[in-house]
Image (cartoon, rainbow, N blue to C red; front, side, top):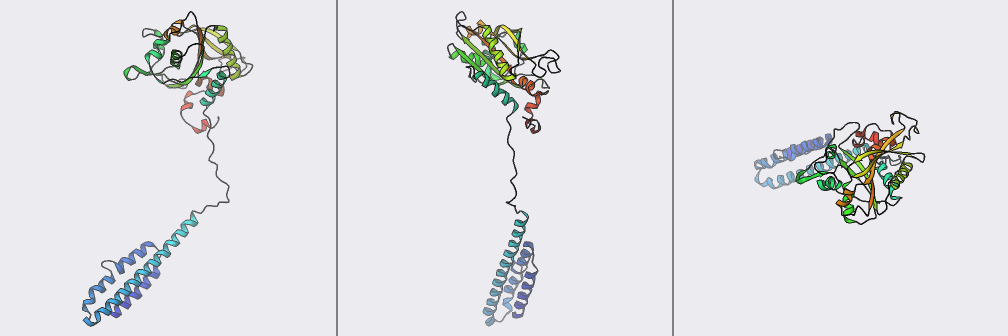
Length: 339
């Protein structure tokens, strides 16, 4: 029995010296200390030893078990430290290298244009108002002189929701909501998102942005509207810009007009963008219809006002020479990083 104990000790020491991985150590542990390992077999064979020698043999086996266990722990720690050292060497970071720049975000071109438009009108006394994007038919149509039988409703392909609600098709409902709660003079711009159930292509999208503006007081004139639009054009498109107004129709204004700005790309000489006309259409406007004033409780014989509305996507496309409206909504960094 004593010879067998010595033999197992020598074998364990030799096997430990050959271990180079955690898997080797685990296999060795099972070989010597497992339930069917050699130490366990020694305990089972102690019955074959003379009774008077059993205590001494048992002590020898315990000492061997402790030595092997301690040796396994030491070798395992050494292997784990070597593995960790190699990993640290592989993942080492040279702190003397210059840092990697993560880059800075850009302001979206629509946001840039929107901010510019708001700033221009704020500089001449307009305040900013907001309204809900989910609207009722009353605020989106009826109060704006577009009753259910009016053909203008067919001109706006609307996203209708449950319970008579809809996604607003223009920012004009803000005009009604503001006038309901304020007495003249009222001078407001209302920027925001609007929705139309339109086919998506290079020129149209189901979501776009507008800026609605209006001014109501006791002595508001058409010539004042023309002056405001001329000032806006010069501030946004350049000091040499001129405007041209053409008759048009909107159910919530009378008279109504379309406003063009002289093409800032060709200085009015005619180019591909302005279709050789020298003019670019930028917005619609007009004097607020008396029916709209009456719908908010104003006396249309005592007050009058003007209103205008513009699409931010169209203006942005003109400013930056963008030929596809879908680029604004695709989040392509190659496009957005140019601004």
